Amino acid sequence: MLMHGKLERKYGLFTAICMVVGIVIGSGVFFKAQDILTKTGGDMPMGIIAWIVGGLVMLSCVLVFATMAQKYEKVNGVVDYAEATLGKTYAYYTGWFLTTFYYPTLVMALAWLSARYTLVFITSVNPDFPMLISEVTISPECMVLAFFYLILAFAINALSPKLAGKLQVSATIIKLIPLLLMAVVGIAYGIATGGLSNNFTTVAVVKDVATNPFLASVCATAFAYEGWIIATSINAELKDSKRNLPIALISGSIIIIAVYVFYYIGVAGGATNQELIDKGATVAFTNIFGNVFGNILNLFVAVSCLGTLNGLMLGCSRGIFSLATRNEGPASKTFGEVSPSTNMAGNSAIFGLILCAMWLLLFFFSNLAETFGGKFAFDPTELPILTMYALYIPIFISWMKKAKELNALRRFILPAIAVVASLFMIYATVLAHGISCVWYLIVFFIVMLIGKFFKDPKNKQQ
Image: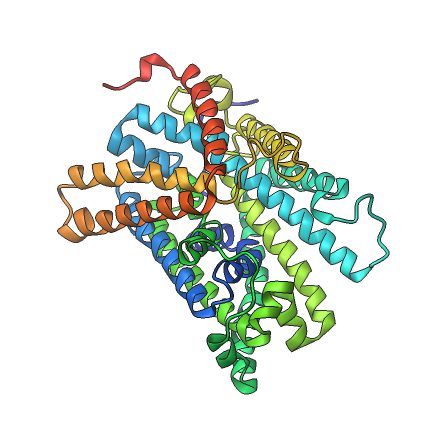
């Protein structure tokens, strides 16, 4: 039997912090580290600055939403904040974008990356492992495994939300092991061998350096830092959320920035800039710890991706539910139902899974197989994030007008910094991606027009 009800408060502060850290720290820090070094033309100091700037952009937005979290709590943090500051209509379109675009594109990207790194580990351990296509990223095995991971993450979140929370804590701890190990040992190794100082003064040879290396590298950090806003989707299930959610957001963000920067420096201590660009971060692990541990790293990366996938699916499975509780969106009565046995919005979770599968198919045909001749191909790990920063700006501005009870720092200064940071990230993203932004916007407007069709006119606010 299903009911149209409320979600139980089942998560504590430690779980919330692990969700923030676990959702954000995933594959991005591993494969974007190489990407950033390439975009900067092998300039290690510029790469470190890019990681710091990207982290400060995230932190500036986190500080404002943490303040809002102390005042508002319903069923989906950012949608609640949009409704409180700009009204029901803006909240609806924000929720619609999160539900149909932002959540599922990130989820399907993490499912694909999880499958990719799993197969990389398997083929590194067993080079004779049979593959229909030798290129892992476009192989049928990778796509089948990606769909399997999607279904697995859905099942865990839909059937046992408490288990999903426990897995998030475990996965967060597991994924921090190689990062912290490389940060500590890599820096010590680099200082002892002189490799660290050499990387800070020697620029590698790169064929395709970005037109604007700094902005392109900051843009590349966006995916590595993204996902923290999804943690606000559990505010209705978080014990003492007005206290715990702000603490989790701020402390989690600081942990993430520190881990990323020190890991990046540690990697520089284990290999030359040229090796890192040509072979990726694995070479630093093998140089320091040997080939066996280098292969084990790929397994840790796969587990890290799966932990992030679990956290992203947590938000994705609640997406349409957050609209249904407002009596908006398609079949609000159906998607607003909560199962008394699992205390989970099962219909909403199924809807999220279907969307993820559709986006994964589009990603395969447009980006990997290039079926459409390059059209409608855009980076799902970065461009949807551009829209999120654009959606934040009106919220921040409205907050400055309405939060009259707050002091100048929390009402004006922090939101103003967040607006500037968001504009900077939008500029960097557009400059870095060029024509693919056009294909993205075409798809974006189609999705939003479909959302307009389901907008209940009775809920419009003047």
